[in-house]
Length: 392
Image (tube, rainbow, N blue to C red; front, top):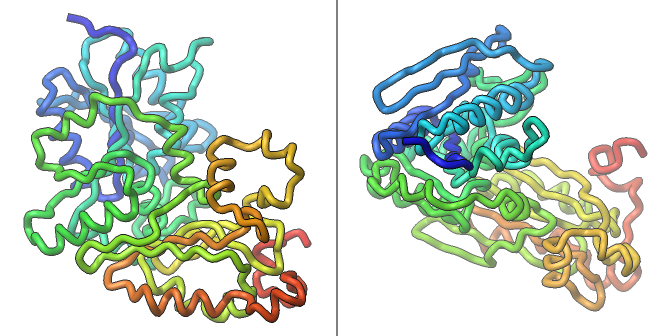
């Protein structure tokens, strides 16, 4: 019996190989016609990548793959997508599982599986991405989200210029999918509940399930929306909940309408970043009154970067040139005085002292007196100038 096109594809990602492999095993056992494809990047530093194909009974094929342009994303796209399309044409498998490598984030794979053109046709003629799932190990989740290690420290870097941190990669893997599978939670129920709470607060849009659940296969019957996932990840459009508390895991979103003073923020930065496992959002500096700035922190690492102008800094006609998601977010943030300029940063942590954190952040805002004489601050006095204005 052959299956009709487009063929079902499920993507399973995760920094923790034992959790990820267990999730794939569960899916293979639940669907006798399923097949799994995995690109082993453990020897990528030697210029070697191996493609492993297996089913519920074991390994079917292991083949070397050329590194296209020395680019992992290009290699996966130019090897993985054609392979899956070929398998789909044969119609021999009811489910095609893509098992990502430890340090690979799911977004580029998901978008390759939905946006690529193959022989003049959209890839969706052959493939239907049903789900994106990230599997995490309960005994490693919190430690890795608070880690100061780079991926290279664990030999998990996937390119010579890969400067990502362990915490950054894990956070991206957790926040993109619509399903999260927790492995090993039953060994320590209290720690398992804490991990489930962390996952639920980092990605409220995702179902949090146990890897051992027999119904894991049910997650592969839907449809994954890459545009919605991208909008959910976009700090310019995200609208996180104001507050959430589950046991000792807490999330607070700091929302204010006044800009921050760059010198006071710089002085408070270590305390603010260290307070939580993960923080992200958009913010407004008095030294950059028209620029939407992105805040992205995981573990002890913080990235700040410009993300274009606030919509209030643009003529009305420009609103038609931005996405519906961006217009909707700006409308929700809008005030008559500041437009969509605002502070909107969400913090999640275990034992997070939300009151103290909010007090520290509030102390970074311009005072009413400073606002009265003008919100702008001379960029010559801005300690973030080298980061935010690298060509100035």
